[in-house]
Amino acid sequence: MAAGAGAMYCGACIRDLALVAGLRERGHEVDLIALYTPLKGDTERVAETASVYYGGINVFLQQASALFRHTPERFDRLLDASSLLGVAARFGVSTAPEKLGPVTVSVLAGEDGRQRKELVRLVDRFRRVGRPDVANITNSLLSGIAPALKAATGTPIVCNVQGEDSFLERIPEPHYSECVRLMRKNAESVDLFLAPSDMHARKMAEWLGTPSGKMKVVPAGVDAKPFARSRARRRVPFTVGYLSVINPPKGLDVLVDAFGILVNERARDARLHVAGRVLDKRFWKTVVAKLSSLGLGSRAEFEGELGLEGKVEFLHNVSAFCVPSRIEESRGMAVMEAMAVGLPVVAPRSGIFPELIASRKNGLMFEPGNAGDVADKLARLMDRPDEADAIGVSAARRISRHNSLEQMVAGVEAAYEDAMSG
Image (cartoon, rainbow, N blue to C red; front, side, top):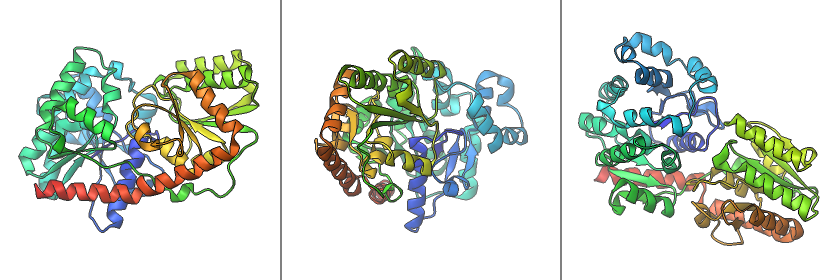
């Protein structure tokens, strides 16, 4: 059971779809259920098979009005049409955490929430289809499903924790505290939690008030095959790549400041290539304005959101990679893909990155939010191209040895077996 991001590519969706495909290749029967909207990943091969529950339009309407908590199922299913959900996700309700406190609390409340009808429908589906060997909820913000599902089927429940903290920390009180209380309550119905890093496992075990033995680390993985380098890393012109969604938490403005220092103060001949969906238009306008005020508009290119082929081409055309996130990243999928290409990455010393990069051989880290430090690291890669090449080679080796898709799938498979054995 995985939350979709509508028409947007997202790291969680890509990870979940790759996991389903990998488990099926290992001979398992996997039923994928999309929540809120259909899932969109680098391939639609898996996503097309997913049925949608907790449709985003129904969730919103049931939150807003008691009338829609009693509408017939036939009407609700019309609102769950993939085409309609896609339009709603592209042009509809805001996904800013600051505005989603009430609905997040309601969904976490499960049978006591305003979306109870959606939960009943989902549990009825399990009753009809039969008890699965294991049920995997891929985000603890969806854990309101767990108590009712556990009571109805008795099936072992596995739940992922993968970045919910950065969302929750932006929800205002009193909804923040109520979300945490409900997540802790729901955790009692979960048999095993899966975290992508040791850091995140420790943080979320404390947050959820769950024993550390109930939290297992399965590192996130990427399919490195499509990213295999077919040509030498670009050295001239030195081009810094940013590929992620564009909003304040991802820190593109920090990178622009660093780029300005690199070019204007340190007289380096460099370029900036940016790709990704604009989630905050006001923020994007300030970034563009800053580039212009620094006289860097002609040195920067924006390519918008990219699918798999475009993403691979983008990464092969840059010299180094940096997404200077303000949040503590739990997965770091974009950085892992850049490392898989063989790019030297510059990442904040926070979240998963100290574990993922591990040493200077695999990448360079900077103090979070420090544009001058980012500029220092980029200048080092520019001035020492042989060292930058060696970092990229080591980074690709690191991904193949510790963060491959095959290793992630095997790790999740073993975790399922642990949950089933009790």
